[in-house]
Amino acid sequence: MPIVPVALNTGVHWPKASYIKYPGKVIFEFLPPMQVSDYKNKKEFMEALQDKIETTCQKLA
Image (cartoon, rainbow, N blue to C red):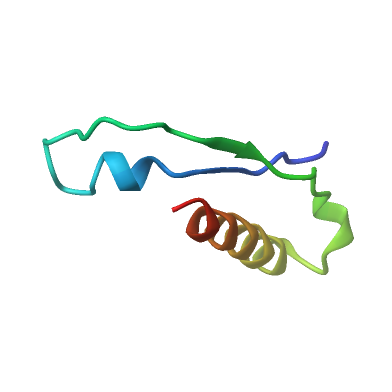
């Protein structure tokens, strides 16, 4: 079953370890589906998934 990664920019408006929430536009970006079977093992897949999500989140911020 494919995994659909989602990147968001909520960290800009809802900082980690803070109770203060700032107003603004939250963006959710759905990335192309990924197949676990396209990678050698689970670790390689998770690294690729994390890289795609983090790269896109940085662009959204």
